[in-house]
Length: 233
Length: 216
Image (cartoon, rainbow over all chains, first blue to last red; front, side, top):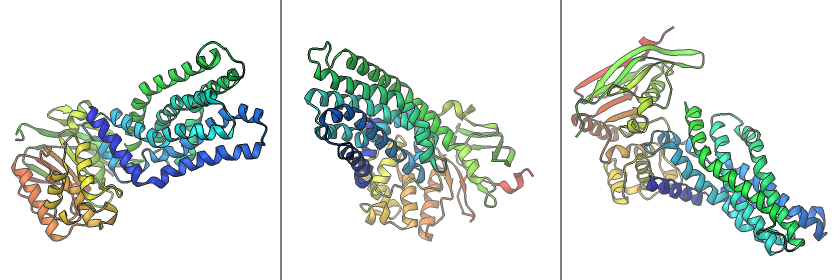
């Protein structure tokens, strides 16, 4: 079981590595959006600090939506997906492997870039940590939930728009709690000595976000596997 | 190696694509050592039938049974018993030929080392290009990369091949026929589609003309 999971992850990482430009496209998009905001909004530090969590979260969400079609698209085009459906390895496990690999190339780099981008918004250390942590917990949810949408729209023409329509409502809670956690941490950073790690309100948001991750990790692979079976029927 | 008791049974199968019914009330049985050649015009439902047989498609009516059990219930256990090769060869452009063979086989639950993958490629005459990316191969060579999996041991008992001879040159066709003969001799089963008759040494070489089953 575990070897099969590692195999799928290794295979997808290798394929992404051979197609680096696609991966870089997502990252560049994220960086550009986050960089243009301070230029467009103006240099007031107070406003930038308030805006930062929302801007980074929206940019991460859009970047992850853009990357979704890569999750199954290529495998479907060359027939590999059929072989995955016919594999003795449970399909849900293969889906987990693919989502993990997808997150490693399209989600994790966003988290790693966050400290750099947070500098542009003048966030301090604790706020940056909170923002990066919220993205670290939140982006896997985006990948997991997005996989369901990607699987459902596999055989649909103009699937790109449909993925966005399907998935964005499901992304809304992640955005609200994720950006909420980060912005409450930014706010408490200014009012020192609040209870909890990042302040009570931020902690509550973090817990809800982690709850979403747990639910998505448990349910999304099964839903994606069923959606793939329906799509390829 | 392959038990003689294994059998694939198709019971009153009906299949439709969109509004059009492709075939209905189709029944046959296949046992170890037997081959079945599906023929028919383009669009007569050969590929659809193969997809039903491997469980990728869902029939309108009827069912496919492996050793008497409906395949929907067996799922992964049934997948372990079969190799399906579809129109798309499941060959990744970005991987080299041997990586394609190794990863395809590992995905099918059969671990395959680099040496084994090279050996399989050698058996289809591709050892010289094993390290080249599949992107750089010709159509026929890509096809052979996909078929190299048939040279890996252990080969599951049931082979479902959709147009395996397309784009192959004459020596490759003969090599493939040889491999299929060996598989049948060991008691394996084969269902395949093609437009050209191929001499296979099967215990029973059935033919199925889907044109006659098309319900109008």
